[in-house]
Amino acid sequence: MVKRTLDNIICSHLIYKKIILLFGARQVGKTTLLESLSCLPDSETLILNGDETNVKDMLTNPSSFRLKHAFAGYKFIIIDEAQGIPEIGRVLKIIYDKIKDVQVIASGSSSFELANRANEPLTGRKLEFMLFPFTFQEMVAHHSFLKEVDLLDIRLIYGYYPEVVNNPATETKILKLIAGSYLYKDILRLENIHRSTLLEKILKALALQIGSEVSYNEIAKLCGTNPKTVEKYIDILEKAYIIFKLPALSRNIRNEIKKGKKIYFWDNGIRNAVIDSLSEVVSLRIDTGMLWENFIISERMKLHYYNQTGVKCYFWRTHLQQEIDFVEEYSEGYSIYEFKWNKNAKVRFSKAFLNTYKVLNSDVITPGNLEVFLLESPFN
Image 1 (tube, rainbow, N blue to C red):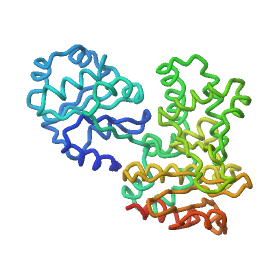
Image 2: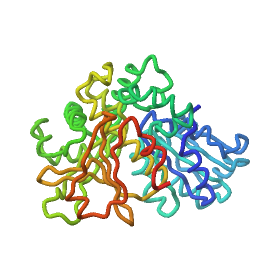
Image 3: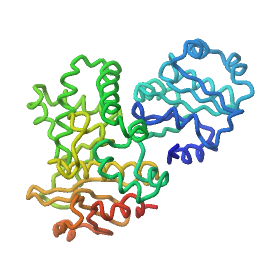
Image 4: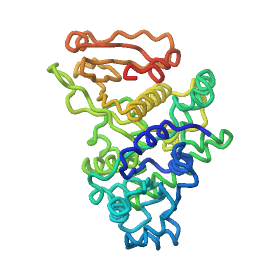
């Protein structure tokens, strides 16, 4: 079993005695993580599934007296699929306030639905964590750096969803099931969206614009809708942990792009499943540069999250087409990066940026030196 980085992080936060909420897209391994947390003794842990009828009955409008008897003898209560419990936020508040010797960890596949239901009742009572698909760092720890580098081409196409990684002979089938069942059915149901074809069009448009600035107006014209609707759908996809935004850095230079944004997918496999492009060899694809940029940036963003660095990340571009793929802002200055699939690529960083900002580090990240970006990070 692949050891998840979040295992140690969650365990280290148990001392705060807060309710722990675990978010993340469907199929990223939340249930597996909770059932195998290294710090929870089996004999003291009760695992409940919010989809089961008897669990729903027990946790619907419960009294603290009833819950004390139900949880007697346990120190840790895990509630998986917690969004299935009516008024789950109020239920968790009762447990936190009335049963002091119990630590609760709750998760749900419909993560932003769980967040909406639990947010207000649990103010000051909760800690939130997000689980991603496997990371490059986790896989290196699992079976070595050389092995993972050898599998890089496969990761660029099929990504890091646990079921995909663990079933290498059926990646395409699994990814299509994950993309179809989650991206369209769950999101449409949870947000009461009726136009599934529009959601699909917008997602495909985003998948084909990796590395480019995203214009809501242009996507709206392409998909036959209006910019406000595009903005709403993109916001939902971001809340569902399918995509994330990378904003433009703008501090000092007059002709910098000030309000631009790029959008990336948290997983390459989902991106490729959306455009039905899962069977080609990386070196023969026309979008190899996009795949590399999406992979390396999403992996770096996962590292920042798990390490709780607080580092702000951007891209940088001017109206004169000077640009830098990735910028990290530290208190002392900036680290800047370009991403190239070609290991021999030569890059000159913009003099406008170098002369204006205090640059701590600049590097070109290729498959030949990805370890300096994904394993030897300056914030460690």
